Length: 194
Image 1 (cartoon, helix red, strand yellow):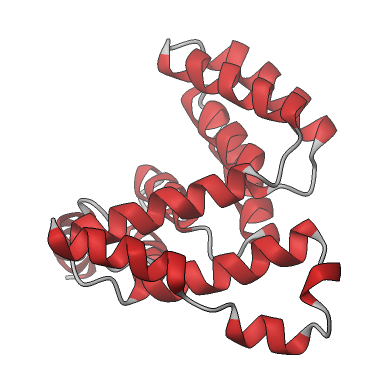
Image 2 (cartoon, rainbow, N blue to C red):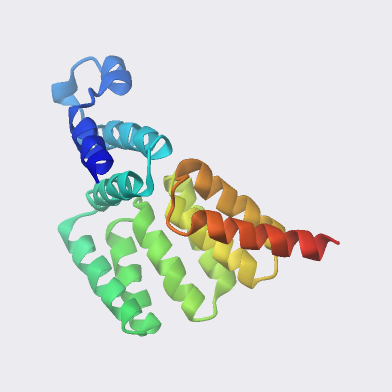
C-alpha cells in the first residue's frame, strides 16, 4: 500500500521532460500533445511499476487520459454502450459505439468497445478489423491487444493469441491475470504444436 501511494505521488511529481523539450513553448501545446506527453510518462511508469497495486493506479490514469480524448457527447454514448454491454445487450451497445465513432473516429477507445460488441454478436472478423483500427490509433493500447488475443484464441490461433498477449504484457507487465493467462496459452499452444 505504501509503495502504491509512493508511486502515485511520484507520477504527480514527474517532470514532463522528454516531450516538453521538443515543444518550444509548453503553454502553446495542444490538448492532444499534452495527453501524448502524459501518456509517455504513464507508460514508462506502468512498465516499471514495482507491484500490481501501483500498476493498477497507473492503468486507471492511462484509461482516464484516453477518456479525455473524446467529446462529452461521445463520452455519454460510450458510457451508455458500456452499460448495454454489461446488461447483455450487445446490439444496443453496437448502436451506441457506432454513434460515438461518428463523433470521434480518431479515438481508439470507441473502436475497442465496438469490437467487443461485435465479438459478442459473433462478428469476429469485423471485431478484428476494429481492433486493428484501435491499435493503429493507439499502438500502446494494451486493452485492444488483450481483446485481439482473446479473438485469436476463440478462432483457434493460439500462437497469434500468445503473440498479442505478449505484446500487451510488454506494455503492462503487471496486468491483472496476465501472467496466468500467458502460462495457460503457452501450455496450450505448445501442446497444439506437438
